[in-house]
Length: 157
Image 1 (tube, helix red, strand yellow):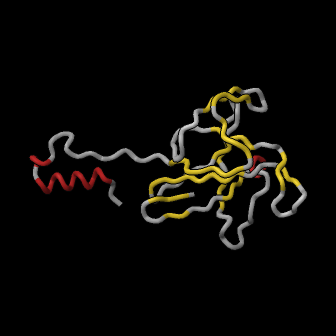
Image 2 (cartoon, helix red, strand yellow):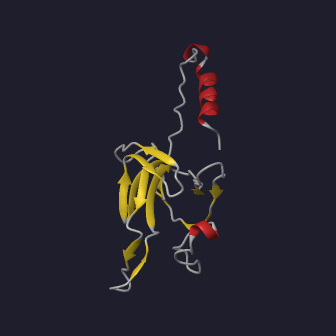
Image 3 (spheres, helix red, strand yellow):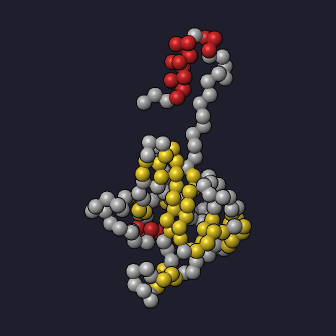
């Protein structure tokens, strides 16, 4: 597949030099993936927060959708179980919706604090028959369930 710049060069050659003055052809910058929605038991973090290991973090609260960093906190530590009324489970579930131009791929990384490098997570589609449902603790397994749809204009995960 040709990129937009090669198509512009062919177009300029076909129209002659007068149509291709410097700056006459503009290729738009690629769009960044956008955070569309977050669903979790907890709240958005606006301002400063201290992580469990003492690291100071600061977040603004731009409206969604956004390409800006944002902070989210899973609170309380224990959440009511939807499948077993009266019981609780560790509050570890978050559903994050990201949108980008069609044919885009994303990497999911486990961000770690301090000088430890982020960990690239292995993605799998939990909606495909034969694949597991929710993975075990992602910090240990380095696996995350990801499903995507692409309508030819926008891809959403």
